[in-house]
Length: 366
View 1 (cartoon, rainbow, N blue to C red):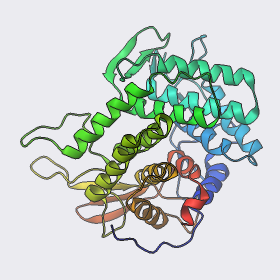
View 2 (view 1 turned 45 degrees about the horizontal axis):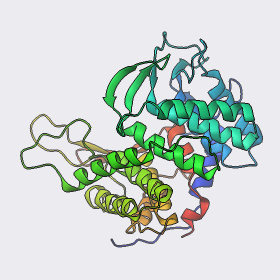
View 3 (view 1 turned 90 degrees about the horizontal axis):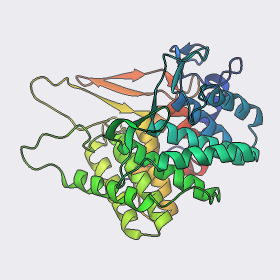
């Protein structure tokens, strides 16, 4: 792929600054889901587990942010189950009042929260939190069967409430195992990793092979940019953990496949999905900031193991720099293209800023 020149920037630092200044809530603890473009007005009426866990992971990565970690951690603590069950509530109103009974535990969200709790425990040197995080993560890992997680479980963890396989949970679990390994955490059960990796590898190869002519794609088919990038990231981690070059090769090929199919040379971003034409299809697609971050994280993990990213990291960095808000700070959420006309998605989300804050600053100095 053709490389393009990239301005030197500290995009991860800019994302981190916007996160701690505008998206964390020092009054009620935790993080807002999003703000308006200026960062002055929180958007939405809910607190979501995924945002609280993401904020903790982003802030805990930086030792100088002690007070900010306490604020982020307060959001995670506010979502702890209130009936003695393991795990976390997944959504409340802005004042931390739960919506309904919440009898389900979404596997990928619980894995993500367990990872955040583990990172926080190591950062704060808290054995009680560490034991709780390891217990929750192992509890999640114990629900896999033949490399497949159920989408959701009952709150008491006894049954699969939504048995549909969740590839997103598999990706989250492999990322959690990679994090535990980097922390030197020996009590997390790594035994499911080979089966999890086999399932992801098979999905990646099916995606790159493409459907047979006339085949209707299944709902879980791996075609969108974000999922492709996250599977590549998980396979890069798995290759490092298992010491297998084949998985690294698959991750590298998947990144090249995603960029070849979804990079837009006109606007410089990545389409969220392939173009679909025909009767009944709406002609718009989106270039999501989060997708470019997912690609960049996958590239970084792959190169750290000696793999090649085929120049995808350059394209991803360029896309992110173009979505920076030089007036108010932070990053817009993407570009939506409706019949060819780009419309900037100006809201600023915790999801985007927490993910980019975890990318090493040096990634933008290359």
